[in-house]
Amino acid sequence: MITTLLEGNRRFVAETFEKEKELFVELTRGQKPTVLWIGCSDSRVPVNTITQTKAGEVFVHRNVGNIVAANDWNLSAVLEFSINHLKIPDIVICGHYGCGGIQALDEENSDDKYIPIWLINAYKAKERVDEKLRALHIDIPHEQRMKLIVEENVRLQLEHLREYPFVRRAVEEGKLTLNGWVYDMGNGEIRIVATESAPKIGKGTCSIKIK
Image 1 (tube, helix red, strand yellow):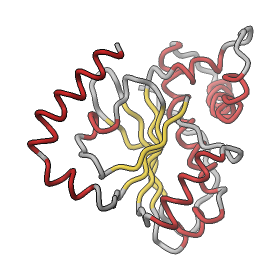
Image 2: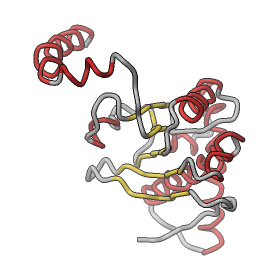
Image 3: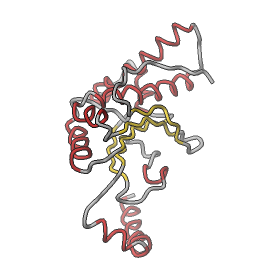
Image 4: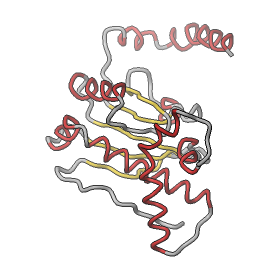
């Protein structure tokens, strides 16, 4: 695979780079992305491919489960740089159906050490969906339940995002819009789950729609 990567780079230089050389030369002078993408590390969700964007258009942060954690200094620095320096007007948190991180929320006997600790930041999404399903006295297929948790996790991470004072301030001042999306690997489409730009936005509640 390493050889494949290097061969791919040679093709990129000979074909894409030469064809779009003016763009890449301009990018050496600086970047002006207009979106910060917080997505999952899953190899099946390539940001530029599914959004058909070019180099320099999207600032990207990815991790298992597209999670926003208050104790994640990596993400904290990305957010601070995006808002205070790049002046990015939109943040997208994008989950995806079939997410291994979300599926791992159901695992009780795992030998993993770090993944369960990380997923604590998403566990409330599972709790909200399961509580709602119990309250409605309905039983749905496992795959459908997982999709609901994926969607609820996006809403939950938007809440976590607003816990950053400088993010909340930028939203309240009308300088930043928060977007929650879910990518469907089955058909390639992105579904809008939530958009937050109003001065006052309440805590998220679990909304379940049985299709």
